[in-house]
Length: 113
Image (cartoon, rainbow, N blue to C red; front, top):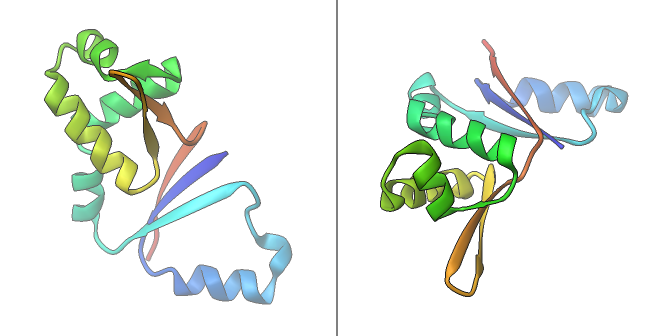
């Protein structure tokens, strides 16, 4: 599954798909952000590092990610919560352990006008 993040107005895309359903991107989830500042807040360098790590390693505990990235567990958990809010990753619990699992295999960022 692919995640596309776009900066700009979604109305153009909705109109295009409505008029030409064959242009719909099946298997793609799109997050629309209004401003580049939202993108920078969502995908800060540390969150990008976390996201990249989870894409490569698929399912790791917060403790494992913390050690691998040399960051505090609280910071990893906080960043994972932000990414989970946008359904980019999922945090799952198994007894005492919390796992971080990416929800997509591919990410794409588009700047639209």
